[in-house]
Length: 370
Image (cartoon, rainbow, N blue to C red; front, side, top):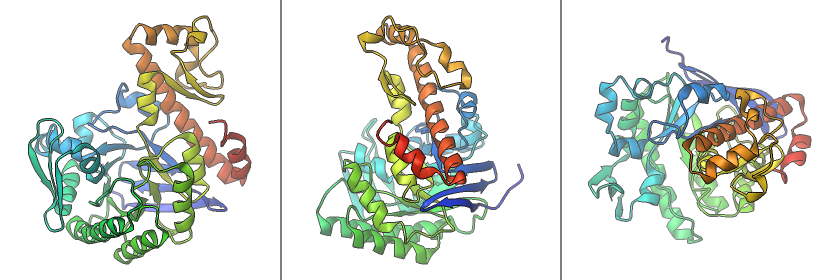
């Protein structure tokens, strides 16, 4: 594989919405982009070939989970994460900071040592420092690496968020030093600061001085209302570096994505399309469909008549309703793939409308429908 310098280009803009491209050694990523989540080296209920057929150009995997199971040494011995999971797409790995917050009942944050916590699997004690998080991600051979940050729970406690943001800045500097001069990989800083504009701006300004390859917005999608999230993006959109990709972590619904693209975001990830697919909720161009509902028992129309990819429209609502109500695995597989395909169709249409200068019209048509 020929190594290519990590780069980002913006081709078109429509107000704050941007149409661009991330360049990596494993291929280019058209933006705005949605990354399917492969937490434990797998996008649940899908093969990599199926993921690629949806138009996905990058996936996300998780440092916390892979550190605990199967362990970075085992993956390194297999040749790296791509070889381990038979994936030739670019992979972004998150730092593990969010999972330390959300999964570990017993955890302690130490400025120097990092996050000290017990595994949610067997209670084994771990210490994840900024340096160790970067070393793990480099060991996995990720294409895009995230700095170690502290992601606090949703709170209006200003001092708590301020202290967390300042700690994250300190960890960002340590992360960047450990990352070194890896020109063929991208290192993203993570903007923290909760719902407070001054803290978000202070965090971003501190990160810009360190000069990262991309800038992520963390600490959102943790229970705040959609309009609160959009206000954070409105507060910061003019300050984000225009020559770097902007990534909103852990988001979200189709309307979240539309609203965030409108405010200058280029990259997204979320478990929603896959998790919803496994539980019977489908995203379609006509709106959401709960396929378990009894009204679909005699509905022989396609799940989404406007879906032409992967022959997914050959399956009727009637049949899918039957699969879910008999707990057949095929139902989860079909709906997961359908949802991922829908998300990629949505991103493709977003890109087309930014290119043609019609994004506002597209936004207005679908913001309340999806």
